Image 1 (cartoon, rainbow, N blue to C red):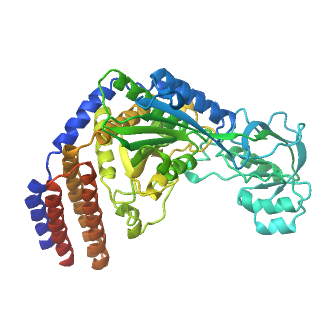
Image 2 (cartoon, rainbow, N blue to C red):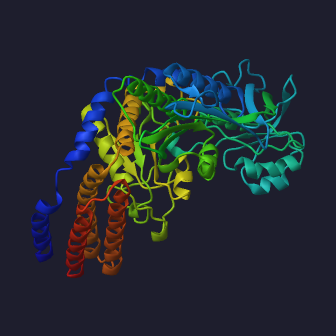
Image 3 (cartoon, rainbow, N blue to C red):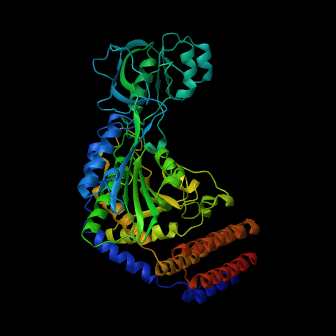
Length: 569
């Protein structure tokens, strides 16, 4: 009781000191919101999704390249000049980088699966575009007919006669079943749908799968929907089952394209913020939505510059390419780039109609202590993430700043904005690997993630407007950031730090009262303190702010009092 009372008194005493008005940051965001909100319509974003979702896109194939040249045409309409044709003073430029690929590209043509005696296909690519494994080879043009062998475990691959058979399993993955091909099997049927995709509800969904390309060993494989899997299992209970399979794909040499657009800064052109959206993958939300939102962001930025309503001190770069590969290369080649990267932001799955897809909009944070101790309101998505170590932390103001701006848009548009601890797996990871502050804008859990039901009808124009608007406003604030911005960020980070320390104190207090170790809970609190002290320090690159050191001292005092309270429990 005494600990709780003393904590409440401490909060009351310090709230007047810490909870300050982040006035300048709000004034800056308000002006930019007034510029962007009426103009970001989501129309170009939606048109982009409608085009791209027609294609199964991987680097070098028809759909991927169609996307690149569509982006280029829209950039030119907006006033971006091809870099080779532009002069050094041109503020808006773009370029397409071309590179040889270390393997051919691939695209599906058509596929179908029939059960013997059935007049209609059990599955066909017109309705299940993801049924063909990525990099699957073709069957003969007339297809193949063979008996299906059900593989329940690894021993079946040794004990059963597999010669000339088609392997089917709903318990082993493709890699395990490959051993059966060495024993004479001619193809593979698999079923593997995570529970979060709700396969017993979405019975016709298929999540896309891929196999390793081996030119000397052509292989075909099909992924099954829940409904198809159940029909095959039922048929097998009645005796031997034969099926016919026809798979047609294209595998051919190509080149990898990356497209970059740049808005050159006026005062500090060699400092930049980079937005990255990957083109590949076959879905509408994943990631035609990211491509489209980023394209409309680039178009609107050009319009605001042309009208004289916007000036940018630092350089803004938009990158579209192959997921992680293109961004990592861009980061690794930064010595050859004109502008150094101060921030990197990935747009991935940013268009969900969450009433249909489920989940919510998420900001995946840079590694902070919630990725070490995930508790309270901090929760991982269904994607999941491993626990990080203290040494893997990336303290920076970007987490709280981006959340602050997106919450402003959320409040304005009645739009839900949440966060998740760092998990990885998208274009923010190359930035972080190079110690460039970076985070991910995305949605999860999406019950149609990576399935052939991730189509245009699951995309929301309103969601894309919200993401694009908030992302641009955040970018403009950072790109024009100065000493006043640094001081405002210091106030924002100080307030966020106090709120976090209070939250962690209450969680730790409950743990200790239930028998948990005090030393561990003190460590958690001290780790958050260290993270926020470093985050406060990080604002200084925008300008010297005298209040930062005072804010750090007050945070240390506050955290020391909280630790003292914990140790008295």
